[in-house]
Amino acid sequence: MRLHVGCAMWTHAPWQGRFLPHPLPPGERLRSYATWCNAVEGNTTFYATPVRSTVESWARQTGPDFRFVVKLPRSITHERRLAGADEELRSFLEAIEPLGPRAHALWVQLPGSFAPTDLGALAGFLRRLPRSHRYAVEVRHRAFFDDARSAGLLERVLTGVGAEWIPFDTTPLFQSPPTSDAEREAWTKKPRMPRRSSALTDRPIIRYLGRDDTVRTIEGWRQWVGTVTEWLREGRSPTVFIHTPDNAEALMLARRFHEEVRARLPQVEPLPQPLPTEPLTLF
Image 1: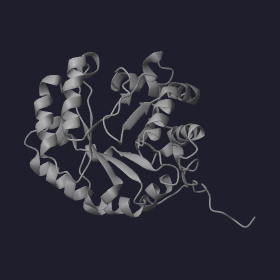
Image 2 (image 1 turned 45 degrees about the vertical axis):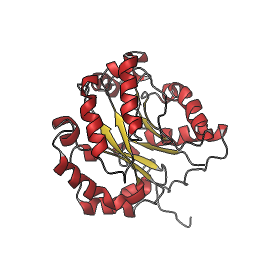
Image 3 (image 1 turned 90 degrees about the vertical axis):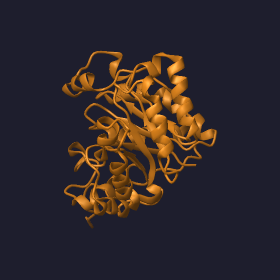
Image 4 (image 1 turned 180 degrees about the horizontal axis):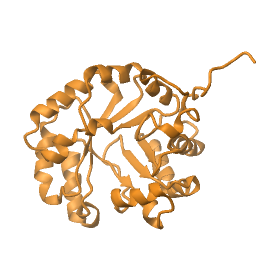
């Protein structure tokens, strides 16, 4: 039984020399991260489709059980809004091909302006996608969370093609006013949505945003620990991504979340042992 956990990135300046060895060449950073976590969000692909050689390097640095949840480029989701993007989609799928089974799901993150009235475009887009991949959709329009009919229509579209609905739980961030510069910035940029904790498939994906205070981050995920534990007992295979506004402790927190679930369900396989941040010596 395996639980996958990860962060929004695999390299972050505050981690260097503290959690991860420093310096590390670019071709070794993901390999080092993969000794801490067994999944990562592929956010960089939102801004540009990577060249194939870069993706080949990602594959070389990770085992076949490592999970990438790879975000579709914004040219497809935000600029073209899922219409007339066949060429961009083809290029993207060719680029990520070297990931093989590591491409756990392709992540369709939609803009906040993508409303229930746009569900026809989403349904048509998902039906045209190759069945060789799994898909997960993140919506940010408030109606999908406040209006039961809109939520039901979205669930029907997703279940029709076996796609998952990715919740982005930001409720801990907005429970009280920000206390750091990073939190203040997150308040202006992150979506303020109700928590949603229903799985549509056997591979649910959670994005969780805590606070820069690790104690409050841990307090805020208690419900998720219980939910994920139940999913595992049901035979599902969840993936959980831990964020904080500054992400300085996110790597450690992702492992902490895994440990809390494993304390309730010892059958969950342990994560790898992290590499030492400094080379081992004889003295």
